[in-house]
Image: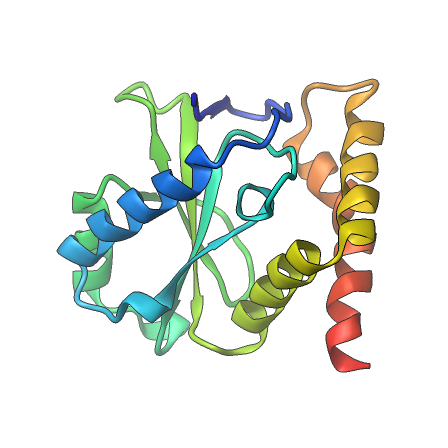
Length: 176
């Protein structure tokens, strides 16, 4: 299993159960460096969906009590676990990444730091769980990814936007 994408690169690889093993390893690294309950670290994104092809980057969600006032000890511990804070501006979310080396050109893991068990946390977990339990939704999501990649191999922001309507449709099922 090889993880990693360069800046703005978009590619999708076949599912491997090794992604879940890697999540377990990284979760343990985080728990050894950050004082938090293990329930606050979850595997999300397509690598957390059985059988789903995905970008070779592992996404984790880490829940904190107050995203507006994260303790320095959390950032220090995440840095010891190999994660650096990115200059990404998203409401109610702080993004960190792990890189292949000190050139910082290829990311292998993302942490989405959010308020624990609040709206964003719940939506991301719901999406993962829904796709894991619904084969038709998995197929539809895979088709959307392939459609984008038919003509492009760059544009990570565009790729994310391309999938956004589907993601919102699924998350809205939580409220209906």
